[in-house]
Image (cartoon, rainbow, N blue to C red; front, side, top):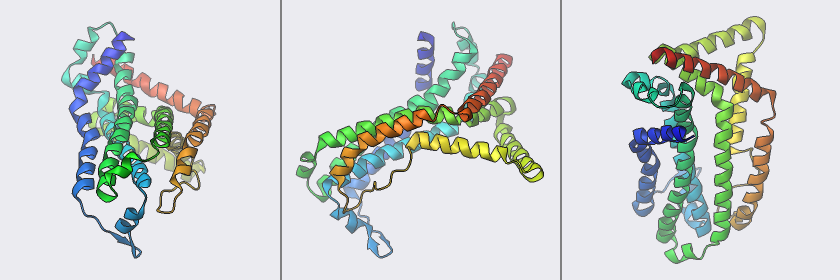
Amino acid sequence: MKTFVTLLQREWMQHKLGWTIVVFAPLVIALLVAAFAQVQLSVDEVEIDRQFRRMPALGMVVASILGGAAITLLLAGFTAAVMTPGLARRDQQDRSIEFWLSLPTGHTPSLAAPMVAHWMLFPIAALGIGLVSGTLVSLVLVARIVGIGEWFTLPWGAVLAASVAAALRVTLGIVLAVLWWSPLLLAVMAASAWLKRWGLPALVGTVVIVGNLLDKLYGNPVVWDLLERLGRHGSQALIGAPRKGFAITPKTDIPEQLNAIPGWMASDAARAVGELASPMLMLALAISAGCFGLLVLRRRRGA
């Protein structure tokens, strides 16, 4: 465990500048926009700026917190996806593998550590920072439009309870989504490890060819069904099942919505965990294990 933690710390030290920019750049931009920008857009003859200014201060706070968390998490997820192909062959490229092989650890934890860091830990940290960033942006926004006194009189107990519940639900969702999407992520890593820059094009081409052959010649869309189900299960595990009636508009009863969020998040988390008892997840994990085995084999050969 101590060695695994050391590997996680190494990931942070290697990428701390990039992840810091990804996480804090939205905060700086949002603060500048909230403090100085003058924005007025018209869509279907409805002035968005005017509608937003009629929104109560609590609505501005909720929108800012949700927006900050969503944007930061989205950027973190995009960054992790871009880095995924190169994780498997990075140690061979810079020859740092020679140093890590000198430690009392094997290939499995050396491969697992960057995956856990980039796919789970960094996005979860970005989510927390996004919530805090959204709160700071809401202070500037409310102070500019309504008055700073309104910000301090808001029902912060309900806001914090809803924010914590949502953060815990999305944190669980990140872990579950990685489980559902692990065949895709590990397949990309394995293809990139063995074929280098041609790995991703070769993988996509193979999937398209095999999927079309099975679908057109044999009437069996098993490849497309597998991809669709993995994508659907992963996205619902991450962001939850749709809930009717939740919206933030000038007419929304926001306190009522906030009080309902913890219960909604708890029930949706139970639903997402319950979906793990599925043969589809067992198949996904089996494919992931095969891809991970290919990564270990390639790492051993390149050591």
